Image 1 (cartoon, one colour):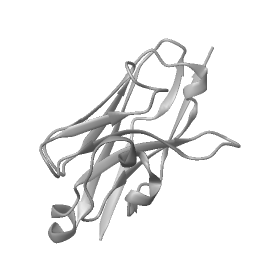
Image 2: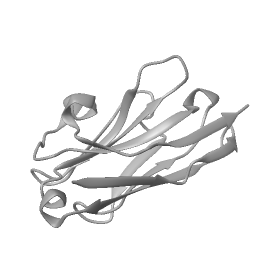
Image 3: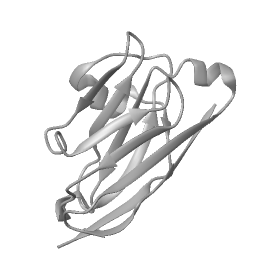
Length: 132
């Protein structure tokens, strides 16, 4: 089993930045088979959406939703380690609960890496609130 712990959320003004972290822990065997990690968010009354992913199943690839592309950057210290989401130029519409997720033996690239069905492990979430 893998546990994911997010941190770094908070309340900021529009235009400011935040950096989220997601640290995986658990048994070594399960962590070894994490091929993709991703960030999702869910605003009140809306469905959860995938916004960024990083996969290491075939080299390292990242993918972003249109809503955050150019403003957010996903990174990872090394494969299967702590993942970060640098969020710049934050907007009120970025207000949401942010979740990190990790796949179990599933890799890929492109839009499918923002699909919830790809991920087995989920964190508890960290709140991001952006005021205008």
